[in-house]
Length: 180
Image (cartoon, rainbow, N blue to C red; front, side, top):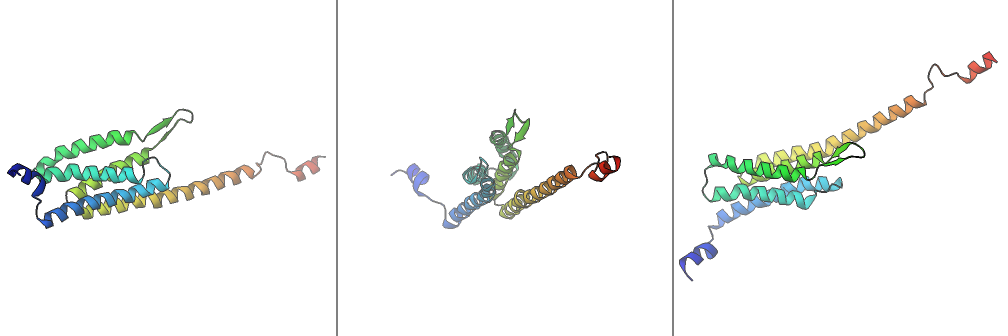
C-alpha cells in the first residue's frame, strides 16, 4: 500500500474531529426532519426525506469547504450557490392551477429554503441558531396554520349567519298579514 492510498483511505482524522463532523451532519438531518415531518403531516409533496436530504446536502456544501481549509470569509460564494440551487428546487414545488387561478406550494418552497439555511448553519457549526430557526419555523408552520384554520372557520360561520338573516327589504310573514 503506497502513501497516497493510506492518506486517502485509511488515515482518518482523530476521533474528536470525526465526531464533530458526524454531529454536525446528524443535527442537520434531524433539523430537516422536523420541518419535513410537519410538511408530510399536511400531505405536501416535499416531506420528511426531501427536507432531510436538503439539510444534509446544504450541511455538506458548507462543511466540506471548511474542512478543506477554505476561509470563512470565502464561504459566501458557497452560500450564494446553495441558495440559488435551493431556489430551483423550491420552484419545483410551486404549482399554478389554471382552473382555479390559484398558486400552491409557496409555503413548502419556503420551508425547503429554510431547511437549507438550517443545514448550512449546522454544517458550519452554528447548531443553536439552526435549532432556534427550525423551532421558529415549526411554530409558524404548525401553530400559525392552526390559527389560520380557526379564523377561517370563524369567518365562514359569520358569512353563513349573515346569509340566513333576512334583510329589511324582505317581507316578514307578519307584514304579509297586515297587508292582506
